[in-house]
Length: 188
Image 1: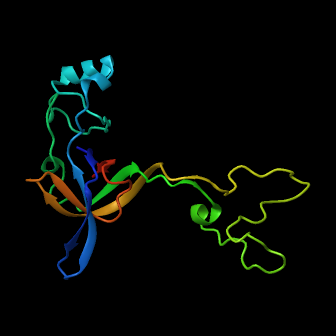
Image 2 (image 1 turned 90 degrees about the vertical axis):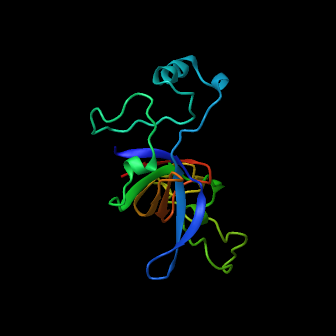
Image 3 (image 1 turned 135 degrees about the vertical axis):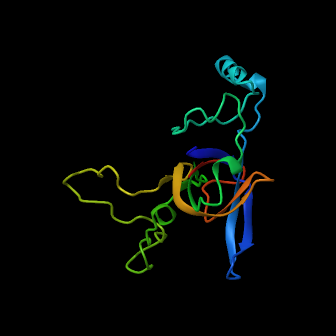
């Protein structure tokens, strides 16, 4: 089984073997989340009925390298996929949306600088963007102000600190993309 879908629960801290306090995320509960039948299309209702389950909110397709291990409608837990020998996982999620942001926050520009030489209210502006009469345009891909965040992000090689099978939790060290309650995909 190459991965799972989960839900980011929140942030906790764990004390490591060396006594250091390690920030980590109890990142996943294995569930696709229940969904009301009236908010499910007929095609998906039939899809879930065939599996013998109620409608769910999140569906993700993984490449399967196992044959015959799972049957239609089986429930998978953290202990089924992540054992103690799995040390690192990749986490895919949707980053927090920041809305429309300027170049200082979005791309880390320094701004125009001091307020000498007639500068007025230009502290966080982008400054010069390009040439004049040629090419008479701004090239595509120019780093400018615009929409920031709310995009698919994959974080590689996050350390698995604990597998808690009785609570169906996986404790991961590091930054998991997204807000609390957002869906994440774990890849072993």
